[in-house]
Length: 176
Image (cartoon, rainbow, N blue to C red; front, top):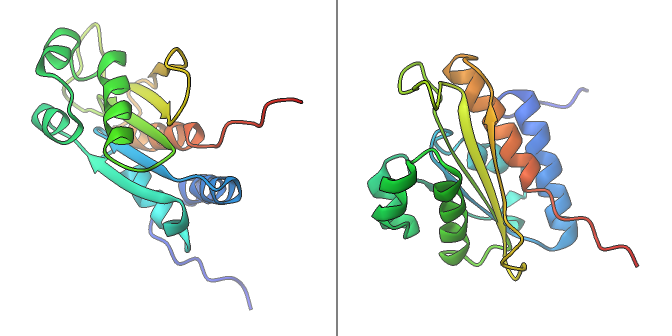
């Protein structure tokens, strides 16, 4: 008898989430997400995996700027100065999620999925990611902007979720 696929999300997303859950479980690590344009898609993918409660600490969906400031503690000044879709805000989202959970690793995603909301400077398909690790050197900041292009709302959100899952993979052990 073949295995029953009991999930609602795209297989590619579920398989990426499965790798994240298995790797973090093996490393004894817990994760937290802070999502804007993905609307909880990364947390949903992680929780599609049976036993994900060993790894998933929490997920924050902070779609509005108010939610980012209230739930994650991002200052209005950072949002006003840099805009919601910026490295500064993504980094603050990751730090806020880490501070408001007991997780070891946080990932944040903020972007413009479309079809509206883009500009010449930040077109539809612009997504910013950040990762924060508990106890890491404060100089170790990972944040990046990806320009996926206008893949359609679903396409942008899927690509953003896949990138975020990659960031949740545990750091390789230092060479001895």
